[in-house]
Amino acid sequence: MRSSWADAVENSAGGSSDNAGTSGGNERSSAAARSAYVPPHLRNRPPASEPPAPSVGGPQSFNDRPGSGGPTSGSRWGGGRTEYGRQGYGGGGGGSRGSGGWGGRGGWGGRDREVNPFGNDDVDADADSAFNEQENSGINFDAYEDIPVETSGGNVPPPVNTFAEIDLGDALNLNIRRCKYVKPTPVQRHAIPISLAGRDLMACAQTGSGKTAAFCFPIISGIMKGNFPQRPRGLRTVFPLALILSPTRELSVQIHEEARKFSYQTGVRVVVAYGGAPINQQLRELERGVDILVATPGRLVDLLERAKVSLQMIRYLALDEADRMLDMGFEPQIRKIVEQMDMPPPGERQTMLFSATFPKEIQRMASDFLSNYIFLAVGRVGSSTDLIVQRVEYVHDSDKRSHLMDLIHAQRANGVQGKHALTLVFVETKKGADSLEHWLCMNGFPATTIHGDRTQQERETALRSFKSGNTPILVATDVAARGLDIPHVAHVINFDLPNDIDDYVHRIGRTGRAGKSGLATAFFNENNMSLAKSLAELMKEANQEVPDWLTRFAGRTSFGNKGRRGGGRFGGRDFRRDSSYNRGNSSGDYHGGGSGYGGYGGGYPSAWD
Ligand SMILES: Nc1ncnc2c1ncn2[C@@H]1O[C@H](COP(=O)(O)OP(=O)(O)OP(=O)(O)O)[C@@H](O)[C@H]1O
Image (cartoon, rainbow, N blue to C red; front, side, top):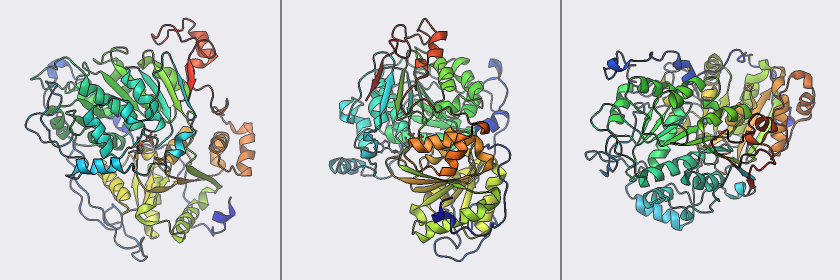
């Protein structure tokens, strides 16, 4: 235990045992309740029942739970915090500029006016000044300059250094300037030319490094410029050209918001569909036209079974958090969507898989969805960014709460508090999240929680209150571990460590994003021994100080460490380069790519940047 933090620890303020069970709170839990397959003759009937529409939340005290009390004294922490709920996310944007260039149910219809997602009127002037100042949203590009990049696959298109080098189209370029993106991040430098060249891609890049834009830009640009067959008209079924799948509702909402900014005034219409929100509202948005559909798998399967969406015109498929989408929880739904409905097969669509982590076994499975693909790794697969200072402290379960309080007090004493210092606390169970949130509130720390047992409206309200700084502590299960881009998360605390090192990587990746620094603290004890080796390795790779006691635990193989991160810092990432893979695929054309896939050291082209 570090003395600087541990010195302040006093007697435990009451133990909690939040470690039991598993985390939940994603589409997995709702998947079981999905309606059964609807035969064609019953399709297009109105759905039998709808989930109730979320009510508009009013002002609430302290956190987002009615009746949740707590001390009201203290400068920033006490007092009645308010969260103002609003209607849940309904789907695509609001209107249209009327280009409607793709017929059928794509593009913006003539009647609608497209709402400006940048939220100001004088966007052009704003964009120009931002461009001229050569400013950006604070991203520190120097932090990324020395990151090694590996690509493997045949005929890899060269990377670019600027957005100007790529012909994304004027309207999209203007939006990039409106977003204040001055130059591409490393993953964007490589991934965008690969995708624009029409190649399938499996891309692995660190958390917070700009993967969303890396898959959105080529899709939007491709739809803007593409010459697609007329989509059927007059049916109650819509035919999107692109599908972006993500594992959680909140992440789908976030991707939708980003994609709407990137596609503003391009004529490309983006709609989101996710579980827990009224389906009718989403159907209305779909019927107004959709080019890019962002969805969670469960809600999409529902829409497909109701024949409200057809995938037969899909030209672009992107899986964000692809390893999560293909793990045991989601794989059946993903296979159903991608392989068993009407989506064109690999080779006839372009497929892009993105994540910060990509275990080999998942890569192997993912190759089913790809054709002659390029593998791109920016930094080591599954590594954390050096921008995050990682601390790990030995804390018994019974001491965790008092230790947490000490950390938060220390933050306050250091002046790191308020709107610009949000703290995200990860716990293992939904019950544990509720209990810790309640305890924090009772002790004068404004906290809220997000997990799978809360209603979608509660989840959205909690997230909004956290983002705004009204409730600067968010207690979360893994539902918030992936993809969420929340500015000002200064500290991620793993109150309960996850069982899998990749989950740890995603959790701590909620801080230290887009070139900014962050802090991650983990409470480690005897329950986490199986993580000791991979955690010590990960920290070492990221140039972090590894406590001696953790190194000792890591050295004890009897704790069942998997140690699957071994093999050198920058080597052996594309599973196709493994000798075992090549033994089983001596033809070398497993991916339909024909020649060039000779495996590691055997003609499998690999380039380092
Ligand atoms: N070229 C750029 N210039 C400046 N900021 C950028 C650029 N590209 C992306 N960003 C910003 O960087 C932040 C992180 O991007 P994004 O959420 O896409 O990361 P990510 O790689 O998908 O992370 P995660 O692995 O956690 O999902 C966002 O706030 C985004 O707006």
